[in-house]
Image 1 (cartoon, rainbow, N blue to C red):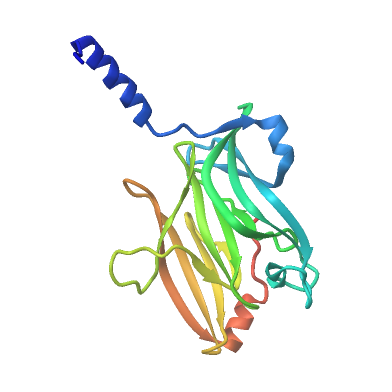
Image 2 (image 1 turned 120 degrees about the vertical axis):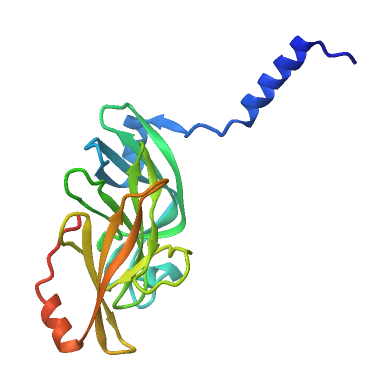
Length: 240
């Protein structure tokens, strides 16, 4: 078979189009927002507002109890209302009629509606708000992955701890007390250690960097139980 130069160029164009990454799936907002288990409002660095929706497939519901029907219904406090599903996060820019699939999946995720296991931390003007997606990590702790909106997409932040050796980032932070804002682009958490009978206070900072921003633990203070209890007694609630 003989190919002319025109056919070769045409074939190259077709192949290049086939190899392009798939565009984010977009769905009708009015229809699918109603299916959302939870919805959040986030702003980016430029102050543009976005709505974020958590939409699940095969969702199940149960309350936390000593004798649950499902093994995932033990994570939380007695009576907490839980939902369990394969969830997808959808993003909608203010004024747009469409939801964009962020590509972020949370399979077999247990959403605690009572405890708000997904929440936001509003940040000052010029800083993007933060989204925390948490997991139950014991009676006195939870872990959280952090996300924010960059260039119209939802992106997970890499995390670097205070005493970290090497360049490999952590994927989550752990704490007992949820974040409270301190100054600028910083926030503080507190974690109770049963093993060491002490409180660990961590200050984190969002570092603006190329090619992407990241989270760094810039300060860590360890105190005894008595001191920590005093400091956390009136812990400020900044998350929503």
